[in-house]
Length: 514
Image (cartoon, rainbow, N blue to C red; front, side, top):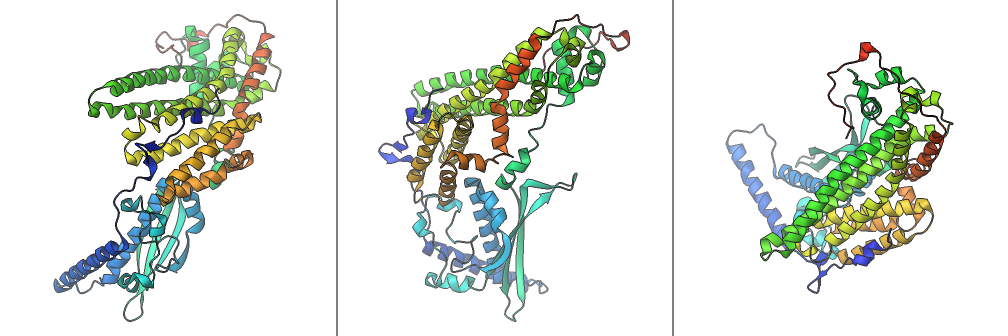
């Protein structure tokens, strides 16, 4: 694979001499916010008077209640925005939202700033994002007696009683005291999903889920014994006829399933890529601006397809690797693989060779995906992307680059991809400096993560997590080579006869599983 793919395409952010990432959109000043907030309070007081005059004397609505509603929604909005723009913030939120009560004003509360991270202030300079202090005037007097409490808790799966590691409930409560000194409060809750990086190791420590027995059984019948037309093409039925070591047979069924699915979906996604490339080129050549604007959408579809292919190759290999490792560590024999498999040695050897190629196909698709995203973030496509899509596209590009760098680090041969990744993140930091504080926070974290191979590996769970799974996948070619070599020494035998009690002529599906 070519190195420096990203820099070969040169991620050039400037468009018409100006940085595309630092275009400032209209915002509001602190004064405008204070005026707007005052209008809300006055309006709320009017509602309160109407409620009281209408006979709802039992209710304890006050201007403070409406202020608390505003504050709680503002805190919740900030949290949602940060999680969206900075996926690392989800883990930070779990750590820092401990339920401590802190004042809203004077920058004492980590979850509240008046101007921070709302949709209207995406492009404000960080210097404008100031806490509410005594210099803020009347708004300080209105808010100085309010405190906020933010805490999180994992949502529990009702079917298992175990917590979801990537789903939390955020609980926000605003406190104040009424005129007679009684503490009042207003609360709002919301479930938020994200990636809990603390669980990166635990989530994948037990490896990715293996291929199901149903899929293995159907694949074995369709691939190796379709002429028998069993009425019930289950794994148990196959094992009963084939005999052999069940774990060995299942491992070969998993391998057959993986290479067939990889081949089938690769053809489908390659067709999608070819179609998208054709539509993209036609859009670029169109004379009218409306059609030309579609070019970025088609380029994004190309990126989507390469992401899917890469994810497919990774998950398939991660799912079958443990079973193949068990087979590769032992000496295979006709008795171990069983009678049907012994009659299909050639098919099994072809599958092993295909298994060797899976890691190369993963790396090729990651490279192609990297190139596709780089192209999308460069002219002429960059100017055609909707502004709201830019940050997610950048994150997706960096994820692919990190996976490439992680695999390179595990190979231990060079650090070219990691060096390119470092330069990319630093370039993005420079372009976003002073703008979009939540996204810039994400880039700073990324920059820290990619400073060395060890830090990158540690972030992804080191010996327990995604790093370990990736390392095992990198060893797949060696496993498949050993298996293929062992198969050469097994003599080919005749296929056994299916007992008449299990035969049927009604089974129609004798095509490979896709």
